[in-house]
Image (cartoon, rainbow, N blue to C red; front, top):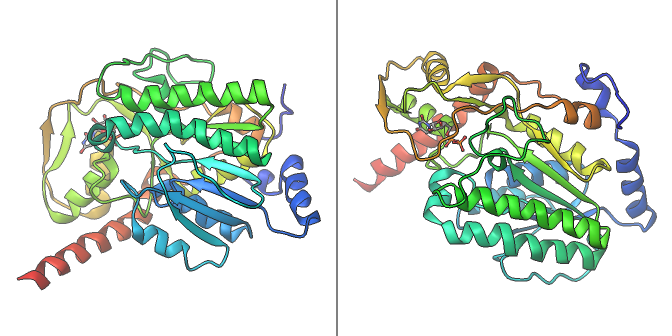
Length: 353
Ligand code: UDP
């Protein structure tokens, strides 16, 4: 049973957890910064997490094969001395010299249109890639953090979803490549924990949004905001009654850093429990952008989950963490980023004529 701190007070968790402190002291004792290998560093979450770890004074080796990550994200990170980049597909082994304190496996196509375009790569990076990165952690005596997903719950039959729920996944449907890869990854991580004693952390990440999302990644927040800014119809799939719970990226990164520092080996949900229908999201986007775009209904993608909402009591207890940015505030923060992306694209198009 974990100690029950006051989960209602987000500030209480700002000081490091005891084990996190020991971890930092161990490397400080050896006279070097903590060194972290982060796969998927050129992606949306990977690049935010890398930036945070660098700001915390750690060294980060970013690894990415750039099929969905971007060189722009790498370039931002390369402004920090503590960052080095390896262009590599972790479905094949990665050899690194020197000490490694933690391996964080974030490499994967993660948006439905991406894993539909790269189904085999998605399966490989979740299975072979996880195996390789666990092997690296074992070799280096490092701890391991897996970026898992709410998709392990599939189209859930219980609501909200807690970590004890085993899920309702169609293994052979189009989303199965992502869902099953992550389920395999969790099983493999737990096997390495049980057999080799690797300290394993598993983050089940729910829908997250923020700056550095790829404008064309097909996710609902990026699609709606960009469509609203361009005055194009908002593409609402199905009747719009399906729900999601959207977490602002800074909140998620705080949760991940705390999870990395804690001593709990099982899966932990990280996400914002405020639940909205997709139609409500469309309305909020129109309101915040001041757009008069119409809403246009399209077909619901196959196996699209009808509801999704994290039960985050475990994260509250273990990490003294809960999200602090509500949907409206988060959208207000992210709209300027998408506006800049739209303007950049317009400027490029103008320069070509
Ligand atoms: N969706 C939508 N319009 C879009 C993109 C997505 O209505 O342009 C819906 C999608 O069908 C799903 C929800 O929004 O019900 C969230 O989709 P997203 O791809 O962002 O993430 P998911 O949670 O499905 O992985």
